[in-house]
Amino acid sequence: MTTEAASDRRTPRPRDWIVVLVLLSAASVAGFLLDPHVSLTSQAMLYVLAVVIAAYRLPWQPSIVAAFAAVTALNFFFIPPRWTFHVETREHLISLSTMLVVAVVISRLADSLRRETDVARINERRARQLQELATALAAAGDLRQALTLAQQALDSTFPGPSMLAGIDAQGEPELPPGTSAMVRDGMACCLREAATLGPGTGRWPGLNAWFVPLGEKGALHGVALIENVSAGDEAGRVHAQAICAQVAQSLLRLKLTQAMQRAREEAQRQQLQSTFLAAISHDLRTPLAAVVGAASALQTQRDKLAPAEQEKLLGSIVNEANYLSTVTENTLQLVRLGNAGELRLDWESIEEIVGAVLARVRQRDPARRVRSQVPAGLPLIRADPVLLAQLLDNLLDNALKYSGEAIDLVVAVRDGALNVCVQDRGPGVAPGQESAIFEPYRRSDRSGQRGAGLGLALCRAIATAHGGALTLGRRRAGGSSFRLSLPVEPRQPASGLP
Image 1 (cartoon, rainbow, N blue to C red):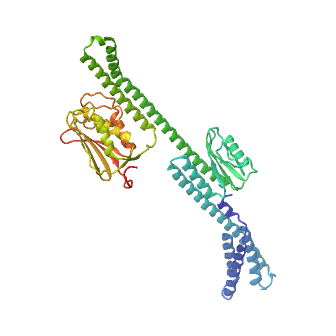
Image 2 (image 1 turned 30 degrees about the horizontal axis):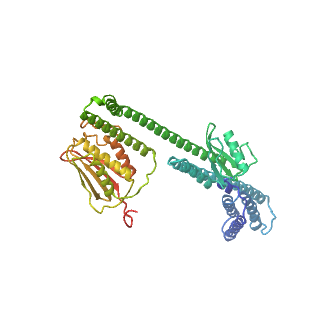
């Protein structure tokens, strides 16, 4: 039985009888005070008023007693002969009998009105609770949150205790260790029958609890247990079923959303794999053919080739192998960043990372076109040095490939961020392609240079994984400016690198 329903059928308390005594005493005192000025009918109305108040405020037993006691008090105090229970005239007897009937009818009508008012108030409160629960469930982001909201709704409505359980892969209720056999059997039977069990349902009437399924047959998401209930509380059972129906709809929505998300992710993964295979077949076929052709020529015609031609073929093999190595490394890192969780970051010095990258790049840049501006005293950053080095290496390699002039690498701290800019004087990027250039397998047609279109996509993925950003801007005199922005934590290590 719900808390609200229990209040409608509560047993009389001692203070209820005290209220009856006070009301009848007040009516009697008022009758004596008004005795010289009013008729017997007006005095009778005072007792009727006391009966109405008692009927509206008290349970039905005290209100009925108040009706009989009011007629008795009127007869004793005001019907001649006074101070006795004797009735002299037939007229007074009829008046007392009529007043008794009227008082009892008024008592029952007032009690019925009070109960209907209470029921209306309970229904309004339940409707408001269902509306609030529906709003909260619509905003729920996962199954655990939806079940928590449902548990709170049941706890606030029923005396309980109550419990909610999901369903495992075998279709059995997920219950904590130590759960009683009655609860386990009841929930299992509720799921098998997909129907409410317990008092007033015709199923397992001997229980002291309701077992309510979350959903319908073929689409069950769990089961609810509500203890300490009554077979006569039909309205409470209907309300419990309404709560569970709302929760079932929310759980279905969340599960469908999760399934759609998984399907979308799987489709994206399949698309990425297809694009990767297409890129591999297109971008690796040519360098592999060049390597195989040069190696075959050296193997079969080495004695016929001049030393200069042999060196040219060996150089072609080395260049194509380096290109294959770069494409493979970029592809693997891009896939790894897409599937991995958080990076393992440590305090690193950007000066050391830039220095290591420049040392490698200048082996491929004999003209030393890369000019660096790295001020001293830069703050430390939390980063993966290998990934950051690969990011800068890709940016510098692109700049060297697409620009024949000097390239500037500038490091500075501004607005709480560490900015690393790679600036070139190449042909730049076509208008409107500033964002598309960072997408995987997208190439720029600036100078006809070959590439798999993975380098810039990997650079942005590395920047994002570090909580930073990689953007592309135009230089006034022509060329591109790639800016890597990394967050600088205010609290730096006490003394240099750990």
